[in-house]
Image 1 (cartoon, rainbow, N blue to C red):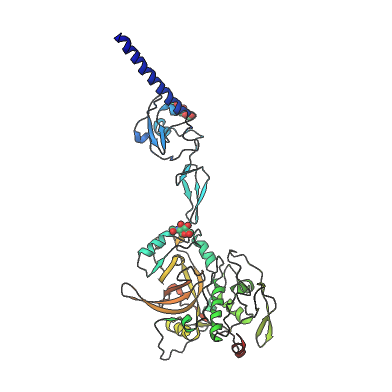
Image 2: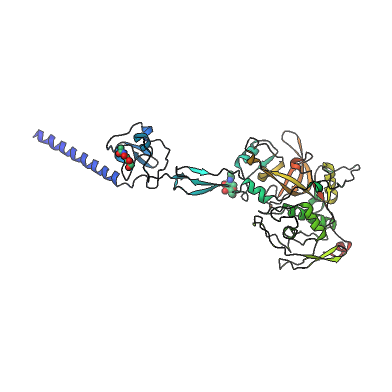
Amino acid sequence: MRLLFFASLLLCIGVIKDITARRSRTRRELAPGLHTLGIRDPGGSYCQKKGSCCPERDDACTVPYLDTICYCDLFCNRTVSDCCPDFWGFCLNISPPEGIQKVCIKNGQIYPSGATYQDNCNRCTCNTDGKWQCEQNPCLINPRIIDAVNRGSYGWNAGNYSQFWGMTLDEGIQYRLGTTKPSSSVMNMNEMHVNMDNDVLPTYFNAADKWPGMIHEPLDQGNCAGSWAFSTAGVASDRLSIQSMGHMTPALSPQNLISCDTKNQHGCRGGRVDGAWWYLRRRGIVTEECYPFSSQNTNGASTPCMMHSRSMGRGKRQATAHCPNPYASSNEIYQSTPAYRLPSNEKEIMKEIFENGPVQAIMEVHEDFFMYKTGVYRHTPVMAGEPESFRHHGTHSVRVIGWGEELAPNGQIHKYWLAANSWGKDWGEQGYFRIARGENECEIETFVVGVWGRVSMEDVAHRK
Ligand SMILES: *[C@@H]1O[C@H](CO)[C@@H](O)[C@H](O)[C@H]1NC(C)=O
Ligand SMILES: *[C@@H]1O[C@H](CO)[C@@H](O)[C@H](O)[C@H]1NC(C)=O
């Protein structure tokens, strides 16, 4: 009796054991297989970490694998495999069978080989070895520069700009600048010396305070390498307004120069300021309202000239075409006198701005300048240890409208120029920047130009 009881108990336990085994076998065998989308974490250590491989079938021979488990028994090596990624390498010393592809992971998502994503200015591609491979271009917005500048004490702060995000440094130089260095004959242009007799210049000066309503807002050249046209139109606009004592305050059209001043000039692929001044004197240009900027996204492609002028005698000219903007009120042509070069002398440049208004300056733009947010800019050495491709630079031109001094936290006085850039008003200090003065920082004092507008007494008397 007792024996019988034990026998049936054993039988019972045996049956239960058998059912569990069959059930778990069923579950394991019906599972979809671990690598149908390829091996996630192909380099991971599983069987190796466990330290053993199991011969034959052993459903307990598992290791946690991502959000599930994987097996290190020989049974896993079947068509619908549930082996750990390193089973073949570690347990069998062979490479995984063909057909079990490797995939890449990003943010917990699985990507097949050939998939791509964009990381700032670089494209990353999922390789057949299950690793992302990214291009290594220096980007225009470089978080390492931003961090290094902001951690250091350079006198200015850096930040991210969405309009630059995703561009390479070389694209920034190619599309965001656009002034050709003046030739040596232009560089040797006679300098107009400013009479400096016992003058006391203020420590702070902003042309917009002295000539309210006559200094024009910073412009936005977009991805058009036309700073030669923007800085020229900007300085000419200010000078004409000042000289006419505010009787006319035209915002002159950079597009007019970009599309029409094409002799030895390259529109949105760059140009020379001396050529622009020649055109302003001999041909003249209309206002931005009449000939609006339309090349912001052309990446250098040229657009046909829509505005011509003819002589009216006495050197004056008038337009022979309607404004490209049909709603503009006037197609009047504005001209300047010949531009003049100022000495590379801080005080003389200051005096010129103080007496006659903003000047044009050519400067060298380095990789860190694109990320300028606020403060007194100086080119920093934060990329000094990097390959040369991270330290590319290009030539630009800007409009200098004043100067000042800033007391640095270390007690030093930083003298600066106040200048308008042409990267829109959300760049820098509302489109302006300050840059070290008196030390030819980025060559900003090397080639500085002033100009007179062509303003007659009748302009002053009758207009506005
Ligand atoms: C494991 O599977 C691979 C590919 O199917 C096969 O070539 C290999 O012989 C198998 N190894 C063993 C020990 O069964
Ligand atoms: C910079 O700005 C872009 C666009 O606004 C954003 O996608 C990116 O994550 C930012 N990068 C950094 C490093 O803050």
